[in-house]
Structure formats: C-alpha cells, structure tokens
Image (tube, rainbow, N blue to C red; front, side):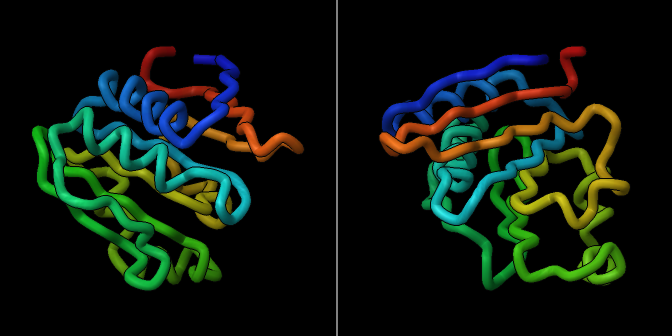
Length: 142
C-alpha cells in the first residue's frame, strides 16, 4: 500500500483507522509514527472498533502495552519510554509482534529492525491548519 490521506478532524482519523482495521487479520502489525498529539491513539481507536472492541482505548504511555479482546486480540504498544530493542524484548514485545493478534506500535522507530516485513507504516504529520497528513506504506496487501 502506498497512500496519502488528509484527515481534517479526529472523526476522520478514527474512520481511517476503522477502514484500515477492517483489512487486518491475525498477525497484522501497524507502526504508528508521529509527534505527540498527532492522533496515533485516535487511529488506534478506529482499528479497535473495526475489530469489535468496545472498551475505551487509551494511550498506553505509562503501561507500555494495553491488550484488548475483540474478534482478533489487539495489542496497543507505546514505546515512547523504551530506550532500546533489549528493553522491548524484556517486556515480551516480540511475542506480541509475532502473535495471532493485531499489533499497533506507537513510536516504533526504536525497534525498526524487529518489525515484520509486512508491517504497515502509518506516518502522521500535523499541518499548520491542524489537519493531519497521513501516509500509509507497506502492509499485508503488497
């Protein structure tokens, strides 16, 4: 996949997440990259809704990982506080990356070499007018 989308509202971002989530299957990995407040967790909420997850989706910044039960389990990771691949491995991150669930990884830059080949990269840029430019690349549909 190679696609760029402009999201003007949080609802647009969530709907894009829902659309992408509808294409997920067991083992799908999504890398979410963007500045603080860019909308990574809002995108994750859309993915979760498409997987039938109804509970509140919150940023796992302090817990590092949130696990949700849906049609497919979803692992939502926030690696903002992780400093190395070794730290990631110590929390069992690789087990989730290569699980039967859907794995969303915020701040995945620290573990680039560990990401599966078919990772979908979602890069979010905040524009001057507060809209978001979202570039989607890679993924399981290649």
